[in-house]
Image (tube, rainbow, N blue to C red):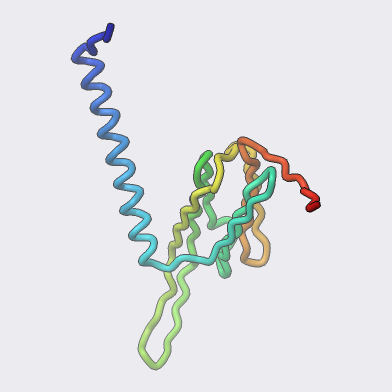
Length: 140
């Protein structure tokens, strides 16, 4: 026998679904905007136990980097100091803000993330939620 949903819980569910849809659209729009701006290079390395993300942030100071990690993605925001240079085409300015969002290939334990920044390279290592061991298979 099916239970009928009362009006309040139906409206709550509808509002929750709408909020999730809006958040998804917002993330898609942000990604599209970021794709048309300067994006630093990145590497994603997956081991049996961890996911390692490396992002090139040459010219950025450590204190100007903000990292946010969830179980599904990494968001990095880095601010450059304003640098101006003049060339034959006129006055140029390097971007002052970089945002990079990376989706992890597997769910991770965000609270155990470890980040290092050396020589312009940001390395974030996060343990996987489900760890798998790899085995060597002999060929007969």
